[in-house]
Amino acid sequence: MCMRGRPGGGRTGAVRPRGGRMEFPTLAQIQAGWPIILSLFRGPAFQKMLLARAVPDAMESGVVRIRGFLQEPEIARLQAARGQLESLLSGRWGVALVIRVESTIPEFIETGRPLEVRDPFRDRLRVR
Image (cartoon, rainbow, N blue to C red):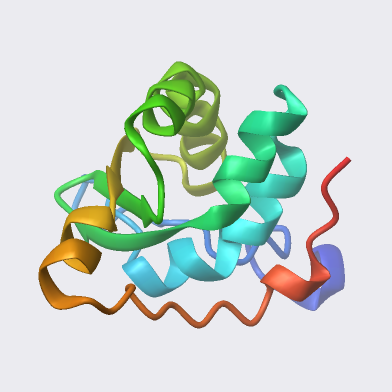
């Protein structure tokens, strides 16, 4: 019997090949796994804090767009952490994923309203 009685060792969110090719995870799967990715991230505390302010916003052809109310220096710091984040995401879902970090500040300037993101897991996240 497999772990927790599930086929495949009980690993949820794993992407299974269909027809000999790998499928990318959906945006919902990435958003649900984001708190786990943040808890596994082993970088500077400031980068982890910035990552907690950003959330996966879009997914297209293996490119995950992460957006948050970030300034250019903060985006540059997150770009430095891209390698580790991409390896964590790839390890979780078994396919190579690329991260693109963007800011919502231009939208805020144009519309006067910040991007409203509801993240039910943010309260459970512990930044160490």
